[in-house]
Length: 237
Ligand SMILES: [Zn+2]
Image (cartoon, rainbow, N blue to C red; front, side, top):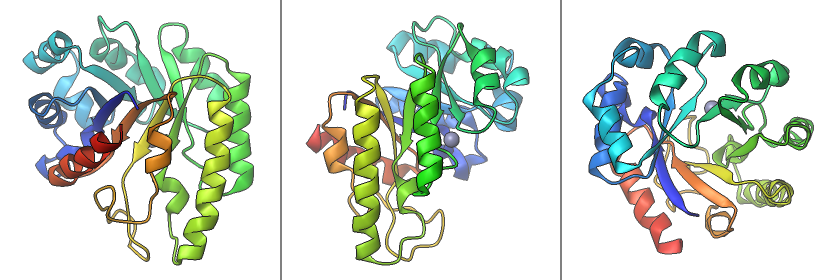
């Protein structure tokens, strides 16, 4: 994996202030910051050319936008946040509206399609994969922990890992840079009770060494876990 990034969910304890996340990412030298363009981002950042954004640009940190609720009304802020970047990437959730969203974003932005609806449900994964095959300019975002939602036994972990390996093989064969999404969780953990990488059941080791795994986004909601997770990833890559 070439770069490690974090998501603005990191500032959840600071009222989700996106600037708090930018500050932290800059201070700790993360190379990519994924920003979900929700209400908070619009409230705090829209039409403001603030100091954090210039610092992000000066350091060459890449911002990646993630759709909030409505691409049409968010395009203006994607443009503002991604200004001056060679790559202007926007993550969208896989859905029946893929083609509409992709039409709105291209050619100005490069859409990245996330396996959002897809858990291990084979049909949905197949659907996501066919969309990726259909839209040649769209990059894959693979949410790894999603495959391990609500697993209660190690047998199930192994089964889901097999599915993940197959899916990963298929997106690798597309030969496009892959964005990976990580958190970890224990067996029988409640939803959103994340662990740092290496402290739960989510396998990440074998995927991060693949040359097409371009970016790994650590999607934690607090800071210590993101730093611990980065230490573990850095040892592998
Ligand atoms: Zn998402």
